Image 1: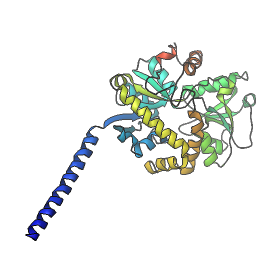
Image 2: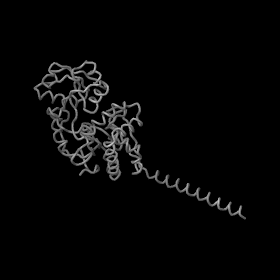
Image 3: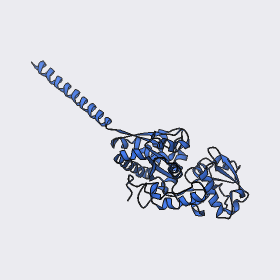
Image 4: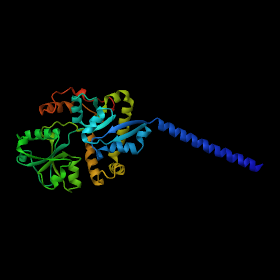
Length: 334
């Protein structure tokens, strides 16, 4: 009898364990079934430290907790980011303000839904101890990227000293101007405080001298944005808002814990950047996030100064109202 009772107790206990395991599995499957994928195309074919907020949110499981399965898509080339957005192959994207403006001019269904950075941190970079002025660049050699906005910003800077592109020599780099600068093949180079300047500091082991374009007539507009496909945004407004809420949480954590955030990025993309470079890049990106309206907020003024400059530089033929390019409907701006 005792054996029978013991056997029954054991059987009941086993069945309870099995039932609990089944329930847990079913519950887990139910949670997984509720995940909705968001396809996010990036600004660059290779991972960089700018991606840290969504890498942290993804790898801490915060997106999944909010019902989001984030798919990060590196584009084949830098020109493909807006193509993916415009054709619906991506739902949201990390891109530039110029890409959004150019895409809008071509009728692409794309809208800026958040400003990643809040100012223009592009400029001219020199080697340590080699100070220069815009006026002193006459006859000098400048390392540049062969894109329209680089040349336009450089033109505006030179105009502040009554110079033109004909007064300087330019050397185009296919992917990176810093090696040209460090090898003294150019006198100065174009770039931003949190990429090329980071490379000078961590690879060249120098403290670069830099003139920021915003101090020489170039509009102080943000460089990087989060953009969305219009059709997707109309169908998924709540999902877009949730993505921003979770990403803001990750951004806040990453600002407070920069080394840990960079370690998470390095774990996800160990071959992308050295830890020293990624940390320097992230530390010099952090100041660019601050905004009166909160992270990712946008204003008319960010666009209104830039658009006439693009018309003047003949990069666009007509400027639309700022509201045609952006919205704060999803980013929770105050």
